[in-house]
Length: 207
Image (tube, rainbow, N blue to C red; front, side, top):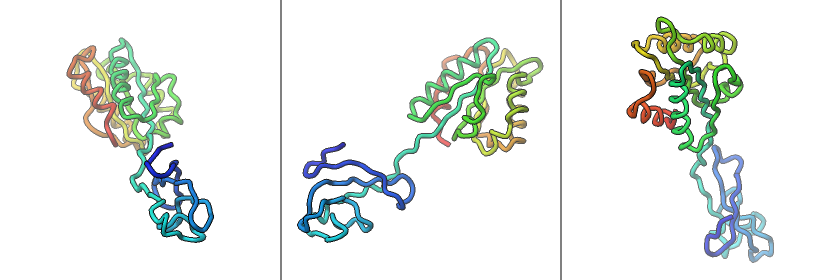
């Protein structure tokens, strides 16, 4: 509830105006004796039945769209804890947006959450000769279709290498219809200060 100074008000959704437009409804009575509802289709008067000059301005329409909460999924695999640390930093950045966050290890990830996400952050460390891990490979094999149309950002850690494992993972995701955005974020061993800042900035990215 909100006090605007001369009338009591409450917010409500207006259907048919597109997006998440809201109006403020003001309580009171107009000269015709009818209770004001504040909003009418033309939003020029207080009462649809008997427009009243005294309450011409009783309805205020706020046309600014409300920011819709998006689901951000952070899915990761981690062998030594370094990619997990990156994932936690990304979650910290994501939390600053006010969006809904889903955070899970890939072996425990819910495919329906990924399918409902506006952005997916997928973390995977390098293994062997710059390959992505078996749990990530299995998840893609079993549930790859949930990435179709999703905006995906990749991150991961390694002891050395040029990021080939994330490029290979990106190719596999594109084959499933995913939209890969930005550069892959790589940490050599545990994330240093520069990588940590990049992780938090990545978590707050807008699609």
